[in-house]
Image (cartoon, rainbow over all chains, first blue to last red; front, side, top):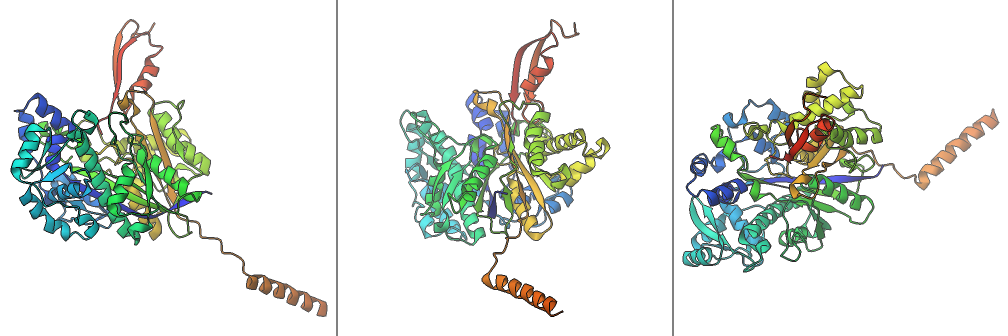
Length: 508
Length: 43
């Protein structure tokens, strides 16, 4: 069996409510069309503060402050039942406040695109200096700031986008070119935010792995941003830009894109590189998506539900050779949605779940937990998109019934036993199964889980090139103990034993 | 002849529910004309 190990995982959220109020797709388009929009006024009044974000149980599950079993046991709705103690840091990562994230944007900017106002830059510096993972290499990149008048001039005369904190302009993101819309301030702000989130996750990953930045061999980015100019939109290598800021001097990298299926595709690609010996270790990373902030807020405001799409999701995973002790990704039984597979839920689930189980000689019940789209239902249900993970679990359970591996009446039990509560922010590529990998790796290491299946699905129709469905999946499971090598002493002992046995028979 | 013969259909699919190509396949032999089909993603 060809395998690669999961050495460490990291998961972070970046609180980005004011970025969302101004530059999320829904709010940005509404503001352009209706600057005095009642929806925008209502949304601004309904924003949840940072402390409430750190008391929201699904977020705490994302950063590893609680596990998914604990999340499942907590009273719902989680929005009405905040955990008593707000937690910024969890076992996997952290929830970064918005002022620090704006400072991190400046740290991650190497083209003088982000200007912070002097007073704001000075106020955020102590917080970033006390951050446990930002070292001198990162902090020296934080600028002293600019006069407020200079920022106003950039915004009013040079198409820069204002950056806000507590409703006031505290900086701006400048365009990278006079006329190239691919280097507009808006596009660059999205790219920089994704880069900054991934840098934070990568720093947590390096700490969680007990390694040094220079130990990282290769980085693969699987976010949703297109990095490039007018002549090569989406040209990429966000990965190497991330590695540079994180201090990974020995790393190279590349990007992989496949809409929301990209994280699973990137993990399969990276695990393959590790397993064949091409790379000794690979960090799979992704930052979050500004456009999706407050994406469904129109429905939330209409239904008087707190708008919770105010965090950017990011993660990082470190894949290393299978050493017989760490949880492993199986590369001999991958889920692959082919061109001819079909788009119906049954066809997609067959390709992504049934076929890899067949390849591995396993039954549906042999997988402890399935992790498909793990969107937080308290965000999606009020928006009319339903409980996405539950719908996926029901489809898997129904397929098990069709294949003669369960009873129809037992579908709710299957969903309860093999499902995972949705706890990921609606950040497109982020919820695609991968948020469960940290919890699964921990449970496998603890001996409380044998196997999980991670499933990612992509919406290719969004790019207007094909209507095909898409997806990929893999299984993570407990390692097989390493086969010990036979020593000379072992051979001698066996020979002596046999000779002794032979001698005693001859005597007899 | 089915009761959809001669009807015009607008099909709105959802990525994690029923996408529009799957619905188009279902209605292919119904006698109805699909005048618009789209899949959306809300997550």
